[in-house]
Length: 80
Image (tube, rainbow, N blue to C red; front, side, top):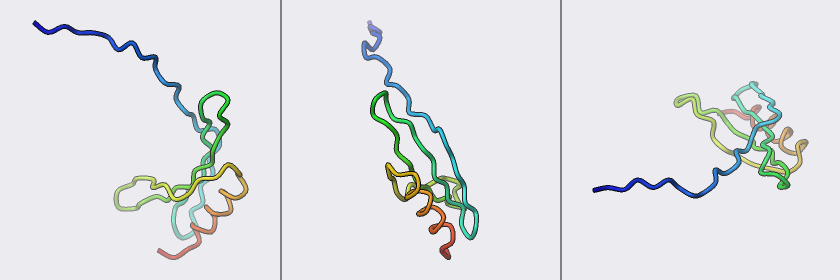
């Protein structure tokens, strides 16, 4: 009655997190380097922890680690 077919699509490579820095001055903020698919390099993501839901919320991204770390530190120092 029903036929089951397997997907012929190859699984996409998964991006991995290589480095992580967390600042917790006034607000919890993290900067993490995410390695993209082969040959695509990496990107630094800056994320803010929502204290009510416990979910990290994207704030910014950069190819330059120093810029991302500086932004994360400044964001952590800001009042809520």
